[in-house]
Length: 114
Length: 117
Image (cartoon, rainbow over all chains, first blue to last red; front, side, top):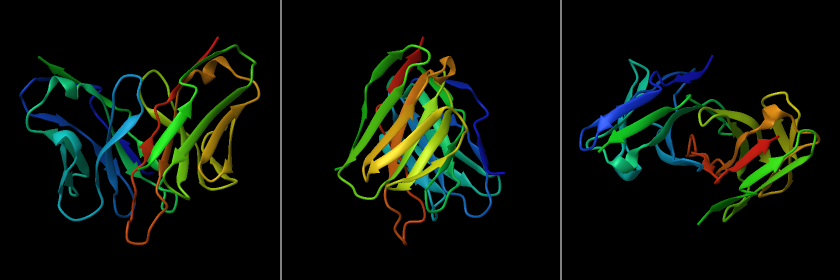
């Protein structure tokens, strides 16, 4: 079965420190992976995606993600956290071909401490 | 540029009443459309998706239904709401698939907060 897991419910990071939000996946075939962010009472915003090519993907707001095929991981990273990065982060993997259907992880709440 | 609208933003409905949530997309043609429900500010559950007018796929059996009467309009309905239908409902779209693009991201609307009392 295809799935995506976010092992941490919450991550706390001090402002200015690097942050990592973890994601692992299980798919048949090529993995197409996504990260989204959600601020309170808002819809999800697309951050970045991995389709093919470089294992380090750069996205919006200074975020990047590292694809690791051997570890089946796609961790979200940022070199220096901002308080405004505090939000709910979702990892997702595509499971449908024509319809671009995706499944989401349960989400990780990121708290950046001032 | 493309824009996705959802309304209403918030809704309080009694148990047993009908429901109609609307989603429209501007600035694109033939989008894939999706309805999700998010409970308790956490995971998203895909409810319905559509790859074209009148083409609806249901992911989870429930008392909700969806329709796509026009290319860029997606409606979520219920004849009789249950308490368990409360949640945050999100509509999303993704671009028409092109041969050289193996996967497209989805773009989300602002959501509708539904409270069933």
